[in-house]
Image 1 (cartoon, rainbow, N blue to C red):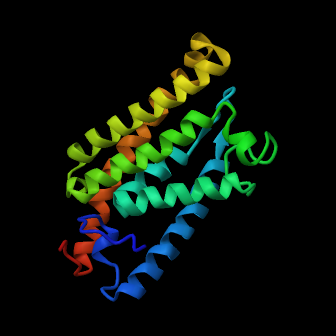
Image 2: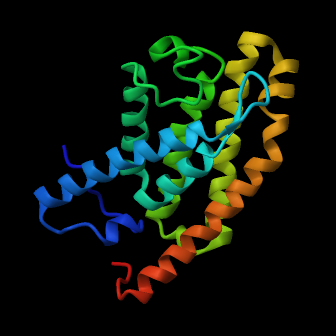
Length: 201
């Protein structure tokens, strides 16, 4: 089934109009983005049960660049790669692989990444990615949803106090910075695209 939809996202403006070429391009982009997600996951600082990485920044940018449907499909493909045992997650293979890892401390955050991509993509589909304030608000909400899912999952494993101490508090400021960077990046990307003579359809 084609992932193409009526969208105002950045990627939608550059896809081929031919249906077969469009689908092939989307598949190529999705696979490439899962590589970026895996690399961003491996760039980390050890803080406790859940480490700090560049992955939330990558998820936000992918969602906002791809739009909701392609962004979510990309994250689901990434989850499928991890479920099959590929070492694409932050702690794989050293902390486990496949479903065993996905059911561990980071399980809620992984689910939250899909929600993040959906929210950022939803905003981009409506043209909010041209405005740092509109996109920043959507991304901040996406961040809160991801954190809530991660906290709830982790609290069920280690208790609410430790989940907040190790799974939320250390990430608040860094993730706010990543939200700001992603929200500013997208309007800049649009400005570059317009400079190359590509305008939103």
